[in-house]
Amino acid sequence: MTWGLIGQERAVAALTGALAGGRIAHAYLFVGPERVGKHTLALKLAQALNCEREEPPCGECNPCRRIAAGVHADVQTVTVEEGEEGVQKGIHISQIREVERVTALKPFEGRSRVVIIDPAEEMNAAAQNAFLKTLEEPPPQVVFVLLAADESRLLPTIRSRCRRLELRLPAVADVEAVLLERGVDGEQGRLLARLSRGRVGWALEMADDPSLLERRRESLSRARALATMSVAERLGLAERLAPEFRRDPVALLAELEAWRDWWRDVLLVQAGAEDGVANVDRLAELREDGARLRRDGVAAFVRAVGEAGRYLGENAQPRLVLETLLLGAPAAAQPAPRR
Image 1 (cartoon, one colour):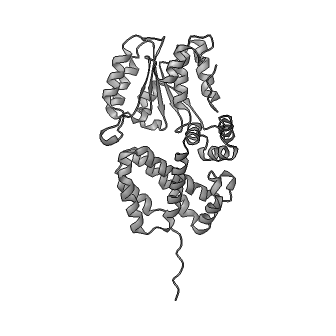
Image 2: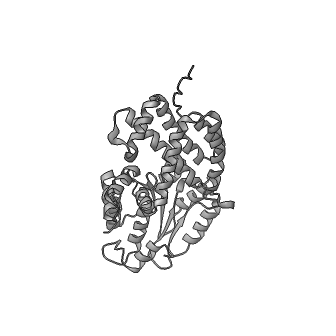
Image 3: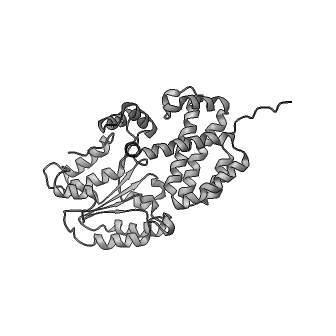
């Protein structure tokens, strides 16, 4: 079988065993960090369920190719919709009602319908309750695949009706090997593998679009600058960033992720654990920040950045979240004034 996922042998083995034994569940919950391969695994399962060859998924028959291209009539992805001015909203009950309508029909061109809900935790309360009724009386020839980075936001009754598979971050060396196979330069591949912290999808996207890596460098420069900003400058930064979350929440969350990674690296340097640093190309700057900042302040800020990302995901007021975060950023000791 050509599943082709790096570091997910346990999840793949569970699915291949279920396929071989005819024990495919009516609903799965794939849990794991962002960009670890959950959606890829869901598509591979859809291919395996509709493949025409003896060892599915072959990746070459007509159903496999159509599913990979996103044009198979029986494979549907439900995701976050954009509202006015590109503002992203959650998954709403109207989308789940459409799923109910479609899954009541027999498969159109394959053996099984597959509905992927990604990210499942973005279903609002009404959508989750409606979807629960579908899970309680699942239609035949339909497999639901829920993808979640934070399964705690799903109703316990939804989780209990799904077969759970956990996807874990593969080793950095495995990510590097994939990048080298794709033709990425050796030094660049090593850097991206370290920065990815095992997220293969993230590493591949960065390799394909150099502008994303440049944007990350800019984010790291802002992360460093926080330590020397005045209170007024920090509040001004929060004021500028808050509207960005409404326009492009993914971009702002990526900014916060870069900040967290930078300050985590500073903390590793302070702890004498430089081997674990992700931003290896900026080790001298990390050492500089590590020497000028208090370790307890850095550790507290790393935690605060993670909490800020969670609050934003829970629809907290962006400006308030960012102001609170930035006011708590580490501050470099200022030199005493000359007399």
